[in-house]
Image (cartoon, rainbow, N blue to C red; front, side, top):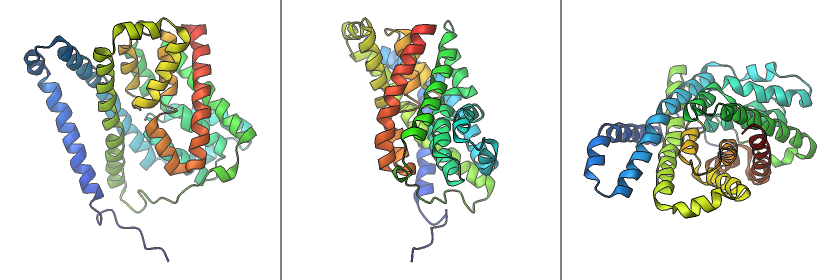
Length: 330
């Protein structure tokens, strides 16, 4: 007989997460406050440039990250999960594009869409529709598209291209699952993450969870973007940027490795100004669909057999559709 799940207050995990969130928040605030004195103390121009890029990415992206986490947690806690099943057409082929468009109402990042997609499958929604929602929600919601518009103020076509390409990939992957997917590839664990908790306590727990996952990867992504801008020789970047195919592949793989939250990746993409708009569009399409943290999360929610088939197929589809949309629009 399985032991009953521990109560939220019985384990040290929540306390550790709480302290980690406080440390992360304090560190970000301190860094932003003292960025001026720090910059003046750095005599090396390369270090000064690194600090400028790092802080600018964090300052621009943090408000969108916080807003997305708050809204995502509110929807996850206060909106009944059964609502999504009732809102979708019964026919799987029609349910896929509707589920993809439903991503507009989830103003959060991919960290929130993975467990919600798992909950949809548990509630009887077809895996194909859940996949479309999983892929579309982090890329076509208002918070992400607004952040993209601010990051690319002179290129509004980037917003249209990101939304269109991401939705197309989501729908095609859903239909591909209807054609080739097998039920035994999905193994959903039973989770009682917020069951039995008061709603406000569950809301706070969801916020902490998303901040821990998304905030930490944002800091790493900002540091990686700053490092790339400072350490990678401009001649190498230019050689990649001058070759259209290599530029697209390079930024697609970079999106997988950086694992940046979708609410912040537009600012990182904007900082990679050496590359073409098409290559940066592929970066924005790939990132919310395939990255290291997503592969890990999908393995935990849907099982390894699903993740190791789904991720490569999605990566290839995102590169092809992102490139095609970029050529047409940009």
